[in-house]
Length: 55
Picture 1 (tube, rainbow, N blue to C red):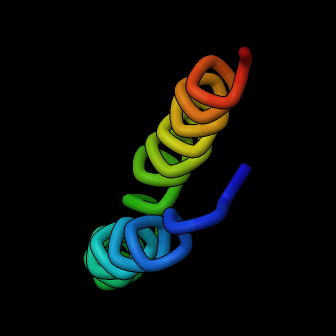
Picture 2 (tube, rainbow, N blue to C red):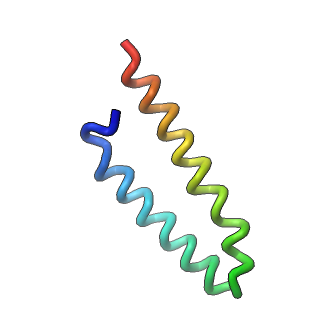
């Protein structure tokens, strides 16, 4: 399923890494608001790739 998509997911992870660092700068409280976004995005990526692979 991830053939040809690993680089895109890596770039997406780097983008969210910046968000997580900014959340940690805010005394760690900001991380509570940031963490759901990468998880929801990865779930959507999975659903999109799953639909793309179906024949």
